[in-house]
Length: 319
Ligand code: BYC
Image (cartoon, rainbow, N blue to C red; front, top):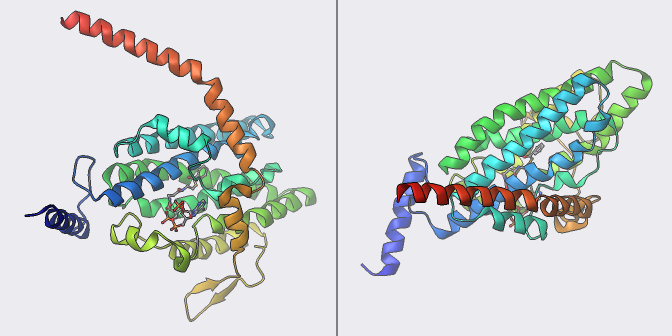
């Protein structure tokens, strides 16, 4: 069999495994494009968790009570953990963590558009938990069934923690909704600013999504960007009604025939501007990550020196 036929037969076998719902594991044969797509998606996801700590970290020192501070601290710490599970999952595909960090701080890698918006008031922390974590869960519950084993398994734990994060945010908003007029205004203002960016998290419309068709075939994605966005809207409108906030979309209306909410047009120009580095906080976020990377260099060096010393001692003992 020549090389071309051999690859073709490996690809057929690979696809039949996917079709039979068998998970792909790190040492299994996989098409190069599958590996590349996964490295791209998992690393963007990991970077999102790490950069996602910044807008919320901004409020740790200003949380309005000890209880709120403890919950927010735990949440931000969880995001760091999620980043680490995801970097580990990406490493199983043959890329090093150093390379991934480098891609982030040089601006070569993407991360979720949502984290380039500022958190201006305490209500934003509630809105981020409710809407941003809510959107993230919608996407990540799907990813617990993704075809690559290490990614799917990381998602199970991440989803459990994200659902706590979402409730943490929603509870902040419930308190504000029962508060003073000023607090209610703060709540509405936060929802007005976060609603549309949260819908953009699901990515471009299916017709403009470059990777969806292949990723659906490989079951990396199990639902399309538009399907997930619709699921999110349908679930969130009811929660907004309970909170007594108005979602900032005059076209949001139940469509009996479709069995879904109709909604207005998303500003894709804004989305691409943010994705391409021109959102309100892109430069700030990268600057913060770069600073952390530089200031943490001595810790990494010390840890490596310790690890090398231990390995040397162990080798001497064996000898
Ligand atoms: N932001 O062909 P498409 C969280 C890019 S939150 C920036 O549809 P794909 C957290 C896309 O990368 C969120 N870029 O792509 C919550 C592609 O560009 P490249 C993190 C975006 O991959 C609270 C191009 O647009 N979650 O974790 O099939 C606190 C065309 O798009 C965005 C994940 O990352 C965007 N919103 O589908 C802390 C979930 N959307 O790569 C943390 C995992 C699209 O060709 N990722 N682009 O240069 C996914 O499920 C998929 O990658 C997406 C996009 C649904 C996001």
